[in-house]
Every structure is written in structure tokens, then in C-alpha cells.
Image (tube, rainbow, N blue to C red; front, side, top):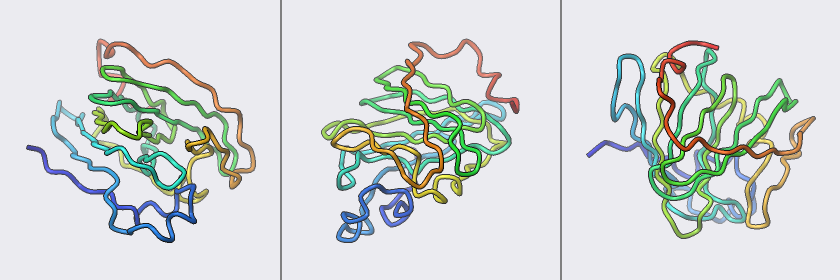
Length: 192
């Protein structure tokens, strides 16, 4: 059984949409669980994240969001449940690109170089379990998402809502997930 690190609500305050809800919520509420290096292939590690179905006030539960250092890409898959992967490329307060990929069990998603990624559990009843392959030579960068109080879009009960903390916030575009894993994971080993 892998060992999981818990992400608590109080660690997410800076990226939440519903700040009114946060003021009365339990700070020790467990949002999701991450187990790193469940498998290792040379310099690539496979992580697992488990996210129970719950709402963060008006917003669907999500990961904090991070960008990989040094331009490394990442490969995600959905093991159980339904997810939305929100990805954005930002230059200071200007979002250059933003896209969302809806994914279900056995789908695959590639996070391009220099994109922030947030995983959202789009169900209020089903747990989400994801796996991801990433280089061990990269580090998670959180400052981008913290600086602007979240990504440029929030996924709420009423749909997508713009984050007004960005100077430029392009329209959200949707892409399809991959239906099978790429033949080779070599692209995860090189900086782009």
C-alpha cells in the first residue's frame, strides 16, 4: 500500500474561488491524497492522486495546481472517476493560452512545457483517482497559481467563472483526451 501525503484545505486558501465559504470551513478538511514514486523507470516517477468527491463551497474540488520546472512535460491518466484538466500558459499576469480537457477512466492527457495544470474532480458523487508520469529532474512550482489566487478560470456549480486577477484572460478552449498511452515516454525525459 503506497504512503499518501494529504493536502488540507488551509493549504489551498490562496487558490480558492469561494472565499466566503472558506471562512467557515474546517481548515483541516482533507481534499486529496498524493503518493509519489509508486513506480520508477530510470529517471521517471509514477505518482497517484486520490480526490474524494466534494465541493469547496461553489467550486468543485481540485488540486492546488503547479507548473513543472525546467520545461518538463507530464503525462496523466484517469484511473477512476471523471476529471477536468485545466492547463494555462502565463507570462506574468497575461495568460497566453488556456485549455481544458475532460477525461474519463483510461484516458491520457499530456501537459505541455511551461503550462500550469490543475486537476478537477468534476463529480459530486464519485471519487477521482489519477496517475501521472513525470521526470524526477523537475520540481513543482506553485508561485504562479498562488500569485493570482488561482488559475484564470474556476469550475463552479454554475460553470466556468473567470478569475479577475489576471490582466488578460483568453476564452477557454476545450481539447480531447488521448484514448491510449503514447508508445514511448521518452518525451518526458527531455526539456522543451
